[in-house]
Length: 345
Ligand code: HEC
Ligand code: HEC
Ligand code: HEC
Ligand code: HEC
Image (cartoon, rainbow, N blue to C red):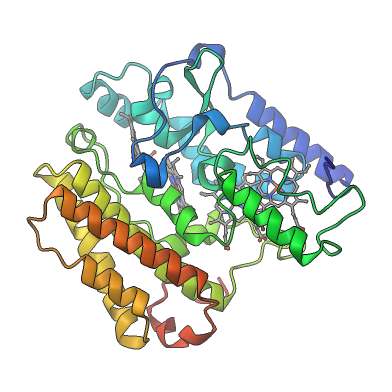
């Protein structure tokens, strides 16, 4: 298996070594703990800690991506979390003794990796694999263009199709798989645990997938040939609709899982209505049977019970995948006024 990598400049090496040091400095041996690394439905958004290799394995070849990631809130927030009084108060209300060692917090604030004894350990703050999927099964595949001398340019279309399929099967959330990527985002960013909220955890429904993945999170150096390129206008349209569909789906699943009364349920219901509102505006501007199907399935009223909510979530997901795979965004200019950010940011 070839481990191709662009030849590093000395700047590259210096910062890659710095990045690696920062990553290595993260782990400490006492972090081992038992627990399941997912707080969402296993079939849709399970995060598999047995597949995690850790961000140090990516830094070698993805230096600019690693530098952006290290500068993002996903890292800086995790670094200060365990010392924050707000975090300590939430943790103590729930009987959590160590924030980094308890999946109750670490499943969203850190990257959990299964250890040989079957327990999980935080190997990083929120990191590459939190979004792209645990990489054990695909890290050696995703950059294999068909042998030692092959490059992305010389790869045959058949080999490329096989590579994508194998990576998908191995659990990679590739950059164009917006539904799977957005599922990862909302698995953390839509809080659906009423006990957590009652303990004082901030309710978050602020994330919009398109806007949130650009800005300080964006790291599109491959397509930008070394420059951090924004997503294209066409791609933004697809990301926007796919993101709202997943927000709707995940809010429905959250309500099915924890239908309790109070702030948490209210915020999930508000997320359902907000996403439906956006999708309705999309439907008004464009003829999209998939979006119409999402709206129809999720038209449930405030007292819907779990089986109905889950059924609606399944229909929304199926329609979202169908939308994404049949769309290159060129025919969707009519929805541009709805998009949260200008195309050059
Ligand atoms: C040995 C080098 C190497 C390692 C290690 C590596 N990558 Fe890559 N990665 C590449 C190359 C080369 C590409 C393709 C770039 C291209 O198409 O020009 C790539 C592409 C990607 C893509 C984009 C795929 C696509 O379909 O557009 C993602 C996402 C990615 N890598 C994530 C990771 C993550 C996460 C890790 C660590 C778990 C990692 N990579 C480790 C070399 C590597
Ligand atoms: C494993 C959980 C997890 C995943 C997956 C995740 N995030 Fe986050 N994200 C967080 C946490 C936790 C924070 C808060 C960091 C802090 O300040 O402590 C955060 C912060 C952010 C912020 C900064 C918010 C601010 O107000 O400054 C943005 C933007 C963001 N995430 C976007 C995304 C996007 C887009 C995705 C998916 C492509 C994503 N996140 C996936 C957990 C996650
Ligand atoms: C379902 C995912 C999830 C779980 C579980 C979770 N958090 Fe969070 N938490 C988040 C996200 C996402 C944010 C960012 C909210 C924002 O930026 O608006 C956040 C924000 C916070 C903040 C506000 C400061 C900051 O970093 O932005 C604190 C404090 C916090 N979490 C503590 C905890 C503690 C303690 C636990 C465990 C008892 C926990 N969280 C469990 C997802 C989660
Ligand atoms: C918060 C979630 C998140 C994290 C963390 C994250 N990525 Fe990504 N990544 C994405 C999203 C979303 C895209 C597609 C963005 C777009 O199209 O604008 C992407 C795109 C990519 C691409 C393709 C870029 C291109 O030019 O086409 C590569 C390569 C990549 N990521 C590698 C990494 C590596 C390596 C890390 C860790 C150092 C990482 N990612 C961390 C969500 C994330």
